[in-house]
Image 1 (cartoon, rainbow, N blue to C red):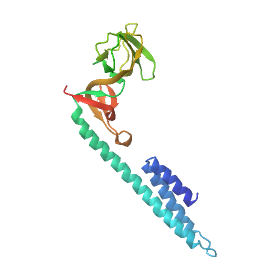
Image 2: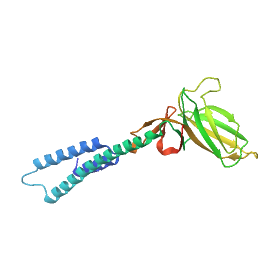
Image 3: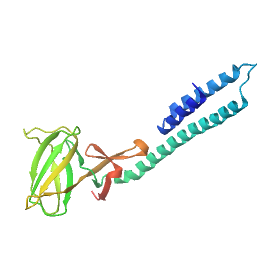
Length: 221
């Protein structure tokens, strides 16, 4: 394994944000360089130019490892800060720019909708986390905005399992034309979870974690 190959491997590890992998390759780099120096041919010592290049590569490898470790520390701090800020959302009613909502035994899945013109019929379709349609129902539209609540009741009268469900709405106007319907997920924030990729934080709503970067509105409980 050449020095340049080790450096390439370390660069890849750095891009993936893997501190342990970069550290392992760094230690391997040092071991190979030391072995090479100890076992060079006395009658044909290492070329000074090549040795200088390897020392430069050594410095680059060391910097890569330190940068990766520093980046990981920054991401951890960001996650902690975001969690501290988001803790103030607990107990408040929130709206998210997503059609995904949580269904649990303690409460129905809830959404809000909005159209840009009047509709006469509105059909709701509920799909589980795998994308499979589990229920449909007709909703009486009430103006350009409204709310949809689903308690998990299926066509046979049984209840859907707790979890995340996606709502899609089909709106038709008086002329029989399809009308785009915007959907938001709503619910009470119950907890905050950090440690996601890039220091991301999610908010727990009715048993389902929703990304904080999808949050668009907060109101009093």
